[in-house]
Image 1: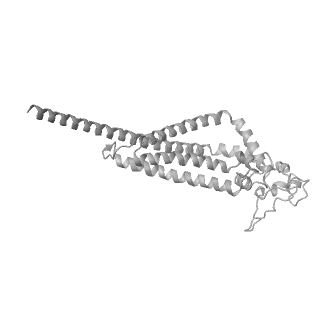
Image 2: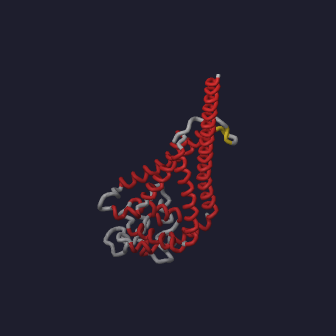
Image 3: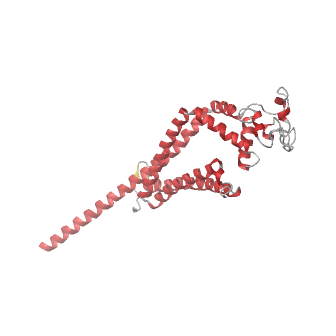
Length: 289
């Protein structure tokens, strides 16, 4: 269902301004979502995660999050973008319905996060333990684990001793990594140089507990993450408010545009009715004269 072009005022903006503002707004998010989707697909393809041998690990692949998030964002933005450009009320209504659904799901998600904190913590522990066990086998998990450990200045899940569960870092391993930890656990992986020493954590699991703190971080990432979340609760809350504000802004623009299209159709139908009545009246006058 398409409406004709309109050029009247809606509030302090003209209908054309709202139309193209809605289009540009959603086009930006459509491009962003497409880039996120492309990154996710590239990551899955690069690791051959969709092959029959690795498909069982797809659910734990971090690239899947990029695919789903990018697909959802780009699809919703495309609906709003196309609906605004062609003044298509069906697409705009789908877009507004989707935005409302997202806002409701985000609100419910926030409530769930608060009410099941302990279960989420347990799930996080399990996920990080999977990353520890598959550290050498999955480049993405290795990258994420290294970033978490270096960023939070931690080592392992609950403590640095968790790396004993890794096949390569276990002290019974015949390889050079035996009794070691990743370089991201080291206090100074550069060792006062410019090139990271990937072997700075080798042999760390054999060190005495009073000696190890001078070389690596001993605390686990889950306790450290809990402290980080507590210290940055304000920033996280502000980011959530910004996200909701963006979604509400998209919703308001689409709603204004829908109202404008409906108003234009009312004017159009009213004009056609007046023209019909005038034509009918003129025909009657001609008949009686």
